Image (tube, rainbow, N blue to C red):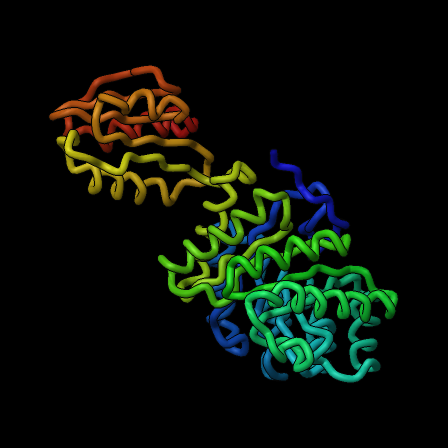
Length: 355
């Protein structure tokens, strides 16, 4: 049975993370942050597809100087991704970012970490402690293997949490990312029992769209089903919009979030007497521009179609030259093959109140 881990709620901008809040979807811009126009365009694209928090790389002062103009045009909270130079973190805070992602361990001396923590505390800006398997401190990376990956990552995270807590800072979120799915899952299981803070989930460097979505779905889906996770990012070598789409599909598959249509379709077999793959692709394209939650089923034959589509809001069971349109499992009309797509979309519009 799904029981959500209860974490300490924090706010990034106006978005609540943890507590009773739903799992939040975030992504990251893939443009040079100093290119203000390109970065703003990508943020707008992410806003339009439902992304709730956007992270930006801030590798130098030129990127810091671009932040005020970007923040002015963004509607979603923005998180600055900082490494090594504490001055970049201070600059991002002065610019007005809503969150920081950093590794206190690679910022340097305690006084530098303290300066960042004080500024973030004064501005009520949360810090995500981001631990990645590929960039662990030397002491933790020595002798690293599959058996000790999870415990080493957790040890690093706990030390960094304690560092911030010692500086009287508790607006904390934590992530422990690796390419290795079992190691990542185990690390999150361990840390979930040790700290009260929200957890950001991700499988780092998961790959291109097809393989990356599978790897991320296995790892994130496992953790979410266990009740672990307050925000997620599906990290792909693909567009950030693809990341958001995949993240919402993972959440929808676990009944954790509703966003836009859900398409159910049969895999096809020798009974099918229509171009079911082409039809499903056409339906999917039509649904892609819809934001209203609706469950749509497209089945290739009338043998199992009505039964398999019974839980759908609107469905179509195809036969040879003819098909039956269903609503909540009940037939509402029979249509010719040439009318499959328009008839189905018409019924969907009726169901969602568009007509």
